Length: 230
Image (cartoon, rainbow, N blue to C red; front, top):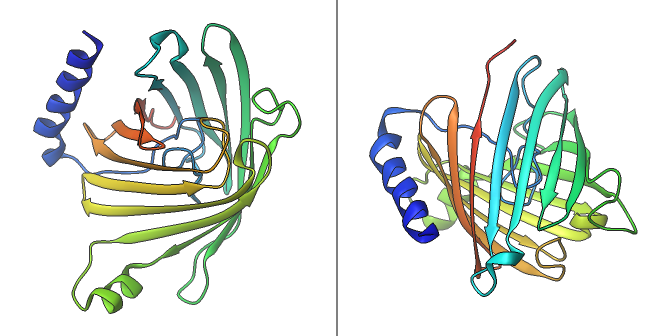
């Protein structure tokens, strides 16, 4: 039944996506990003994005992970987010992100932040990180020898649930659809090195649907809604 419901949601997304533009959305942990990797986008001041994500364990549905989060902008270049993670028990999430400098033609943007500031998911350390983001479209075109769809790359270093190195690619296939790929040398699910892949679809100007595979094994899906300035 769960598989039929997910398939129906995806089918509806594929029907609706052509009418609306795509945009950033919260990742699993509730901060703007790809699947686990954070990006350099700061949530607009005065607006909020509630989100729900699930990671489905095909072998044992009792071990599914549910993420209920909300993100908001505080001041320009600073956003915060939080929520709970549930897999039978619940743990609170508190996150913050600050963009130190924007991207230029010559250099990437620089963003610092924390995921799981209270160290509930990793009992030893909060997920402190620094991330660099850059438009890689020109480089992709040079390598391919032809025009490329917009491509952004992310490189970061962190502790806690983002311990070690993380790398992400966000490829905008159309204004409504983007593909996401990422590598993490450590993480929460699983805790060791893994690769993730997925896609983000715009259902409306405010509503986003994410689908993907964590470690190319466990299915993940998420939905988020951007509430305009209050």
